Length: 126
Image (tube, rainbow, N blue to C red; front, side):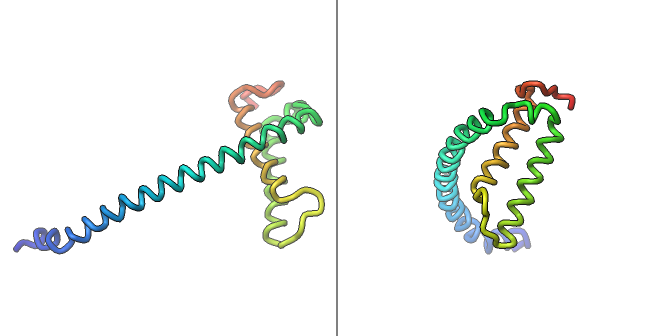
């Protein structure tokens, strides 16, 4: 028996078992992906209320003045705040960790709007 044939005869049953487990794992993964996607959609549907209230309070000019650079700085501040709260195990006194995470989502969305040319007063070349 040649070396290759021996390898196939010894390893083929394991490969077939792996394929079976792979199909089961794929079904579990797909179900989990569907559940997580549904959770994500629900979470993201909460954000427009936050975005709207912040736009009523601040307007778009605070972003327009500094464009992408301003958004990056604001995101950095939020990420630093998040890291301090989580890694130093501090209780937030003003805004919750969830509020901070929604702010990061908001700045990411604003950056996408800027990059797509949809944010008022900001051109894509900034």
